[in-house]
Length: 488
Image (cartoon, rainbow, N blue to C red; front, side, top):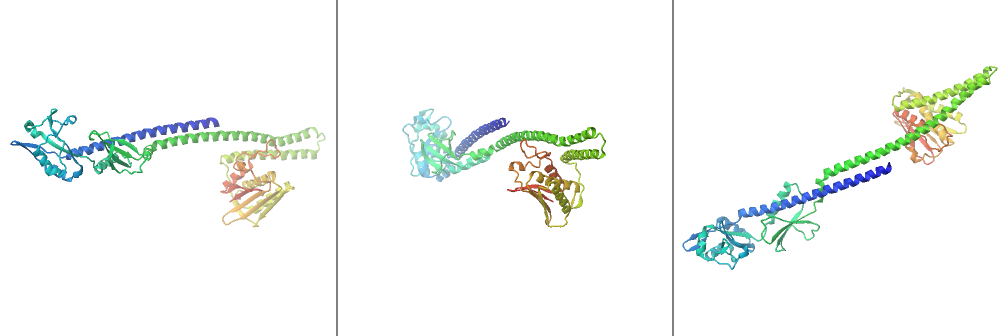
């Protein structure tokens, strides 16, 4: 059974660890996907907002010339830009025209457009690299462009990213999904670092991912670096982990309880066998004595000697009373176990009870030295005289049977309690036996030696009686003596 329980516990722990690790991996994958989606959505939102506020200028036709009208919104936006980072990439037109990046040729300049743009918007940054295409064909002459004048649009973009704005958008996305992580950005251009935001040089073991947004300019990448979200993942998995742990603990506890019950049943079986053996020995003696006495009256008293008959009858009477007392003890024990025993308390002089018991056992065992000590000449207590005296008698009887040559009985009156101690110099009870000696029918093992008779109910009976008097009976650890203390 122990091997079975150990194997079962090992399998349960292995299964729970595997299940929790798989659950952790699934939650980690889900969280990484959520971070990636939040990052991509934030980049898309950022560039969409930029496109909505970008500056556009429509070029109108005049007689034999081209002029540029820069909208007030465009001019205000340009003024806010750092001229060192302003980059006019292309002049693109609408509906029927497009710029073909793969066919950019030597630019054709339109002075009136470029001068106006340079003077009002760009300052020291000259515009170079503007080409106009219509249906994939470069348009070089003013005449050819005159049909497209009302459709031309100027688009200017920054070569840097406003990380503060992007950070705000990403924080809102992560907060909406209840994700709390520390992160930073790295902006790459042509595979080289162009900008860093919130990235410490000492940051290591960070998780990195690149944005998959379609709005990022060509040959540019935006990287997100964030701390390992192990704690956040564990929080998400906390319910599953706790339920798994509770299941494992309950199952293991049940298995150990099963083992405890099996061991208890084994002990009870041993106690039962020991009890049957003790009852057999205890009952056999008085039965054999009575049988012998009756046989003596029947076969060896032909003259009907009254004195001899009375002797045999007295022996039989004593043995039958002894047998009756043993049966009563067993019945009382069963009554105690069912909590049906009623006690009748009276004012009793404990000094007198203990003195009488000491004198009785001293007379029965003259080879022993039994001492009684008290500081009071008389000490009254409200107890059941019959059962409480029997409990004290059981303790003294145990000391006489199993103890040494000297037994001491002490009675002390304290402020709010009464203490009775019964000690003998027969050595201490082993630690492994101390918790069991008050169990019903339990006797300290002595092998196959049955030199001291008993049922193992004396201490059990004494403890139950003392507890019914709202007292406590305990074994006091001592290196040389066996000492029991009653506290009332």
